Amino acid sequence: MKAVYSPCVEPLQYMFDSKARTLAPDSISVFDDEAEAKHVVNLFGRFGVGYIARGKGESSLKKIAKAEWEAGNKKWAEAVVLDWHKTTKDEREAGLAPDEPPAVTTAKEYLRVLVVAVALLFPAFAFAQDSQPGVLKSGNFAYNYDLETSTLTYCVVEGENNDPFGNSINGAGQIETSGSSITVTGVNAADDVFAVVDIGDVLNVRRSNGNVEVLTVVTNADDDTITVADAVDLTGGFTWRYKKTVCGTAVTDGWISVSGYTNINLGIQYDAGDLGALEVVWECLSGAPGAQPVQVYPGPASDCGFGTLSTSVCSFASTGDRFTRGLANNAFAFCRIGIRDDGTDNAVREEIYGTIDVGR
Image (cartoon, rainbow, N blue to C red; front, side, top):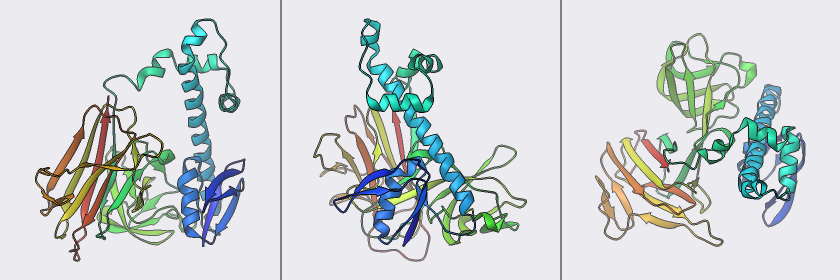
């Protein structure tokens, strides 16, 4: 069973197992089917819906969820109003009064501002800013990832609002170590700071000099204790942020939106490990109704860079192998990278990185 908390003030409608369902507002729902709980969290996570442990630390987790709900709603409302303002620009400049969709009305009510005020806060150039040449964004399909399967697996490292290009998420309380150690705990055990953290997640800790420690979660013993891949000294306690690593093997897993970006680079790094070989595919998806994933690399005659073509995958047998597949003049809506081992994996932890860089 999984407990899920929704900070939303309205019921959330969703479909699961071909049935219409409702997530109650501002409440904790317990799911017997963990797949349904995961579906709900993935669907509404950008609005603060997430797993929650009953008991100690529950109030802190609720506060975090409500803060994410407020941030998610604000971001949604701003995007809706700004997009409407942009798409109706010609009509308004011609003196026409375009119809206002219900979503825009709701968004404006949430923001408590007139669209004119929004236009003042976000001048005309802001509407087109993200579509101008020179806009670059970067993210990760995987970060310091330990591969443990011979089944093609698709991952995304997600920040705020489930956005691979988004900022990291504020963590609860403070975390610390006893000297240099791979064991990290909460300064205050009652905070249950790691209740939202899973194996593979990525933590950021900023020191007073501006340097940032990037830590990868290896084990999660309980809500107060984790181990990380590399020893770190956090004596005295530090605030922290994190990103979620979300992986799966389904046709719906691992996608990052690339819609509107002209150039895309999808990179893979096999930096450490003891695999017989790391096998990789690059896939993209059209935004058209009914479209299915297509493998954009490798093809029948691909050279795979420092790797080798092995039927339908690129095979990288040596640590240090790296390869980037570039897509110019992109017209796809989504892309992803699939990784698996060749069936040979011993005791050494892998360090695999999947990267995405997009630009216009």
